[in-house]
Image (cartoon, rainbow, N blue to C red; front, side):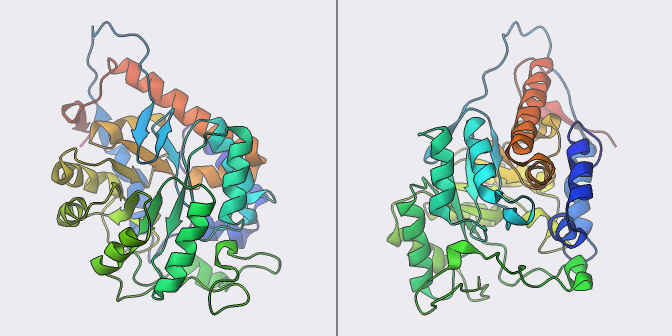
Length: 350
């Protein structure tokens, strides 16, 4: 994280975290080019404001599949929150609910989805929680995970589709970090069919659109696909009945030569043509980044690493600070832009 009002949270988190765990959260694939480009791409863009619009402070609620959020800033799925803070995903869920926004809880969470959703609804009985899912080679495992999400009251599924294999992370390799410490587990994978304990999350090169269609047949929940960068894939997803898309390069943790998510967004949004919501994550560090993303066609944005830094620095209060800061900055920037955001307001600094 560079600059901005949230930089102090990042620095405090780095001081408090085990260096191995900091590098797990902060790192990316390969030479971390895609990771860095996610942030650099925003720095190459600027907003051209409209003036004399005569508008009051703009309202920011957004309607999403299975959820209405008070802000277009969502909590993106990230793994292993208890490595950042003892309360882990419970603290993140409470903060997201207090902010009136959607938590996308990760399949690799260190707290089971039922408890995560329960913690959110202790704060707001109408809190929206989505469940992020990697489609598993064994359909019985996928279906069991879907039922757990349904039973928890999740209002949508977010299927990560950019991971036929695990990314190669140099920082983790140097540290020898391959397994969670004793006492930690990917709790959603506990006691699944054919496994009396905690089952590993599997990636599978054979996963295809056929698997996505099978998922749609096994649930009535809206399904969003996360990891879309190519406009042709976006068209296939729309034609296949997906409820939404997330433009993402997995935070730079998979393909290191992938484009920055914000650079891929306009073509994906154009291909979708407003038929379903298009979200974007990767590199969101300031409220101005949120405004640029919405001007380029996003319905909402997801925030990942800054949430982890807030969690590590100050638990639930730190996550709330991240979400409140980004929301306040976004609303301020939007007001300065005349209360409107459109693609012709985004210009290059180059």
